Length: 244
Image (tube, rainbow, N blue to C red; front, side, top):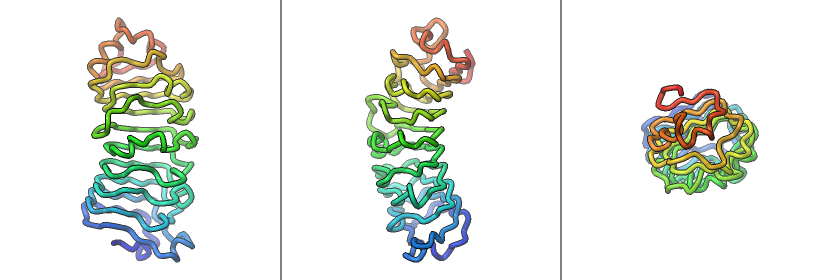
């Protein structure tokens, strides 16, 4: 247990490879928002299970990274109100994490990366991303998750998103892309089972398509391939590091 009240002026908190199980905050800190850290990193803490009751009162925090916390089941409560400055969030290898807290993420989040979080990704339609109009960049890996039916599902992403990086999936949902009128970059990585692009094609707004380690798809996306008419409008196309 680490009482954060002992470090009220700490600007960056990084926990790495410890046996820490929880963070705590006194009621006084909750009422006065006494935590001033801007960055919170929790890496490879396999016994870490919970954040303080009531959440983290850190109004200046802009970045949170949580990786390799195998027992963590929930994120800080009231993130949408207690972390109003949060812009960047990375969650990796947290297999027991099931959902975002009630109220969702703060409205100012601009970049969200989620890798190898099986239960969390399975509940992606409850993420509430559609309301995050500041969100510009999304990275999602389906590694170690149940095989998704489609991604992105219709209504999952906000229309303001500009960049999507996705890996380890087998199907792309054309309906989910249809309303992404601001999407400029789409990167698809390590999808050996992905066989084709959506029949509906990709958004006209795309300026860059990058494919890496997608052998079945890359054959169809060459200039003579079956999917070429779906992507011919994209100014920059790169397959395994080579422009076409």
